[in-house]
Image (cartoon, rainbow, N blue to C red):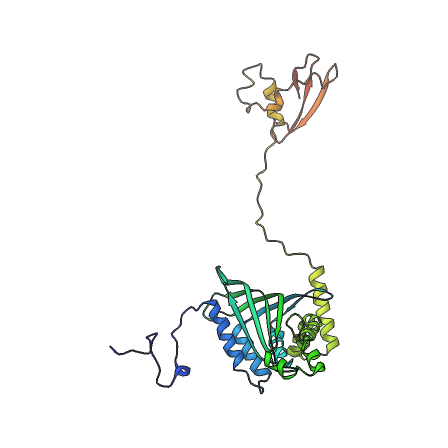
Length: 332
């Protein structure tokens, strides 16, 4: 049985680079392996378009990259957006690095509805420096990645926390300059700070200013406005968002049923000693069962009652008299 192009073990006669894979969901770690291969294919002539294509292939449009480490003056934390990520990787190579790749060991994966999270507590960023001297730097830390759960499987969040780093110099170079104290003193000095070059650190400090200005630059590029007009427009829109009240969800108006007053029926029901008068009256209310002798002074007192229910003679208003014994006597 001959193999077909759909066979996973099919070998193209044009070589492995012309082989076309069938669509399938790869593991997240394999995406890091592909990113390492793409970084190795970089040349000295790689321009901004090459770095933009690199970021588009491996990072989402709204991706963020965060670096956390501790310098001599305290802990640092830098977060940059998608538009600044290509420049970050290019500054690594501008600082004298000739090779860059990431090694993930014992990573843990967790699947969610629309994303995959990779947590690697033993991640190493390895950089090979050609200047100012030949040095291999191993930066170790924890890397947390969030991938989108789709066919592209691009990185949505990148968070690398640096714990320690090591700079390795070949013994052959030390043997060559064993008799030169000045060269040995230069070899004993670190060429990076927490595994990052000065080019990268300066760029991260600059990103603190550039990141809030992304909205201004985007508005200037889209509407071709002057920097002053872009700033005025952005500040005005931000002020509108701060002043405008939060939008409340629309609620359907609830129609309340109006209850009819039972004052006339309650007074007529309280004098229900006579069975002929209580035949056409309403049900007795709890308020009518209370004795009003303690609330009305001695003597007769008239309590006017107006109701929409007509009395016996058709009048809308009538009064009720209270006898000294606390009994009701209806008057018209």
